[in-house]
Amino acid sequence: MNKKRVAILGSTGSIGRNSLTVIDSLGKDYEVISVSGHSNWRLLADQVRKYHPKKVVLTDTTHLAELKEALEGTERTVDTEILGGPEGLVELAVDPDCDIVITAVVGAAGLPAALAATKAGKTVAIANKESLVVAGSLLIPMAEQYGATILPID
Image (cartoon, rainbow, N blue to C red):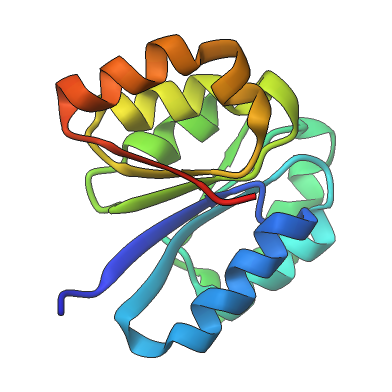
């Protein structure tokens, strides 16, 4: 089995944290390649130090400087690209190195990334019903068109 590479959008929330726990239990077959959080930069920094993702996004840029400072010079994070703002979620979702996108972002804020991941043909594990309620009529046909898989996980 090839290693599955996972992006977790909303990794600092309860579903994101639970997703990381599940990935930990699955062992070497899964790799966390990117994580994002909205404002909990301290927990996000801890996750980056533990998982050494390729990219990290803090969508609320108020504490972006603190996140960068917390990760500065840390050997395990030296190659991690640090992004700020909600547009970073789309970048994580379409990353060609990513196989599975877990969207655990609250409300409709995760919708642009879910749409982008679907259009990119990813496996999209959606943890918020808003994306399906608001855009299910777009997501389902788009998944069929682009060969994506939509999995509700909450």
